[in-house]
Length: 464
Image (tube, rainbow, N blue to C red; front, side):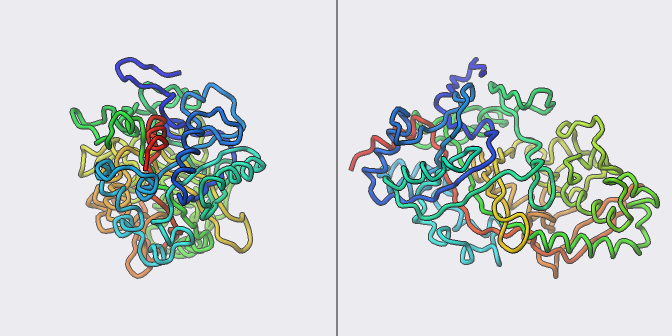
């Protein structure tokens, strides 16, 4: 399953939700507080050992060869490490982004206005009390209550968030999601057979391994022997305002119908190539949605098929961007992963890769908040997650064409100032859309360490 040559890599040391995604349909995330550190340490010791029937076993990467009905993993916050008794000198060896935590880094992430921590839902409104985010994955929900009861014997359960996969792998905005993930050297994933993308070094995601940068690695906290094979995670509760999104698409299509350049965006009769032969207004809505995302809603890359959402035999992952690409530089997909395309920070091509794991939450229809429970995993917050969110998503620093604008889907947009440029079929001209509201609102989150199995045992053996 793994090529261990020259890496010293042992999949038994790595939690199982990092290098490969689970193919299970439901998740329960539990936000936990350590109120009895001895009980908490005992739970961690038993969970790492995996032999007690009343404590869920930590799922490892090595467990991918097994068929498991339930998979269990944990992330620990900086306050959580302190609550477990990690010594001050070891706490100080962690990066500043992690020690400050997500709420204190909010402005850097674009979590302002309605997304600011002051508006976050409980228990995220008291971030210093969130010590562990435990995640239980299964196809059926019966296992969730059992594991929650086991956790409640060792921790105080502050809150619970349940998620599930929607039909056809879509999110509430209607896009097919999670089509493109990093592939890693020394890791065999049968779900990625035939995927033709660059292989990322293990140091992209795990602490203690080579990175894209020759001679440069991300710092491993002390003691290094324990925290090697760990990763950092940004756990996010992201509300998706589908009503605002669909309303904006309708308004944009109405505006475009009479625009003097509309025939260069969607030639007369070309609507028959979109969906099952949509009317012109409906087709314009889908063109706007596709350019905003960088994919048609069925997952077909706009860079490969700008005139039709019919995937044919096109690859959904093997493509790149050029200066002449019809996929807008400001689209969500191109901002978050510019691949090998032209950007100002050429050294950043393929170097800010993140693993994205997520499931939807909330009702599919009617009233009620809904959105995405997302995990954004990497080896360094500053060089990866925060750099993407700040530099690329919310400032557009990778390309002078979009500098000063926000991501149309995920960005901290305000109708008074937001813009998005649609590309046309015949050159460098654009149609500018304005007045985009904020479609994704942060409802909470936490920066966590996904500790290696040696790290979990180290925490379990602390004294005092």
